[in-house]
Structures are given as structure tokens and as C-alpha cells.
Image (cartoon, rainbow, N blue to C red; front, side):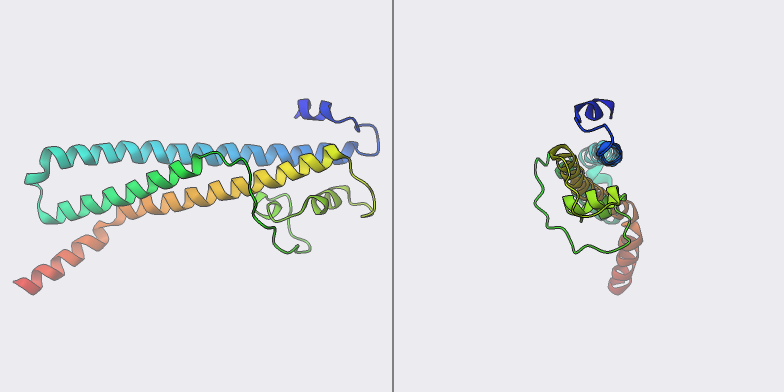
Amino acid sequence: MNAILCMSSNLDGRYGMVDEKIIKIFDNVNDLQKFAEAKNGAILALNSAVLLALLSIFIDKYIQLNIVSKIYLSQMFLYLLASVIVSLISLMPRLSFNEKPKKYIKNENFLFFMNLADYKVNRVLFEISGENKRKGFSKFQKNIARQAIINSRITRYKFRMSSVAIICSLSAIFTPLITYPVYFIEKRKHD
């Protein structure tokens, strides 16, 4: 944060508080983005390890497995593979984000990155300054606010992708709840 603060030429009086606030928001969003990336990396590592273990089981013990186990392991493999793919996609760099902001909602917490992603640059700066909307903002402030908004959108995307990856992982774990009843129902029909 200090390096960015030093870049600002307007720390004396008029813009100082706005600069500090927008830089703190920017830093907070960047920390959340790092967390989202670490979360997706952990999901990727864990699910990749489980996929390799499943692949080893398939190769070594396929003939010995009963049909229920084959179905379960196949479903688990597919769900974990989906989770790995989603995690990989979420880790791909996003250099731009052209998502349109939603309509401004009064009294919404713009400090929360999910809400900040829907703001426009001037709205963020007006909210921070708490002053007359005719006040001009420096190019530095607009750039930091714009970057905070873009990073909020990227962070929101990464958190959504990690949610999808977690749902796929949980689906892989809980497929026996679906597989075994279906197997026994089908077995009863044929007996």
C-alpha cells in the first residue's frame, strides 16, 4: 500500500483521505483475489491427487471391481475431472473484464467486493469522498478505483468458479447416495 500511496501526488489535503481509502479498498480486493486463487489451487491439487488415485485403482483392480463400484468410481472420476477443469479455468489470467455494472443500489455496501464489482468509477469515488458530486477526482484516483472495480469482478468470477468446483467435488463424494439405491432398485427388478 505504501508504494501506491507514494505514487499519488495529491496526498496533501484535498485528495489525501480519498487516496488512502481507495488504496485500502484496492488492497483488500487484491487480498481476496489471492485467497480465491489459493482456494482454487488447493481444490485443483486435492482433486488431481484423488483423480490419479482413482485412475490407479481402475488400472490395477478393474476386473475385480463389482458393477456398483465401477459405476461409483466412474461417476466420482467424472465429477472430480469437472472440478479440476473448472479450477484450471479459474486460474487462467484475466487481463480484462468487460462485464457491465448493474444498476446502482442506494445504501449498498460498496466495500464488499461482490457489490463493488457492480459500481462505476465515479460512484465509488463519490461514496468514498462523501462530498459534492461536482468535485473533480485525480487521474490517479480514477485509475485506482477502476482497477479495484476490475479486480473485484475478477475476484467475484474466481469465487464463483471455486463454488462450482466445490459442488463438483461434493457431488463426487456423495454419488453413492445416488448410485447404490439405483443399483438395488434395478437389481430387484431383475430378481
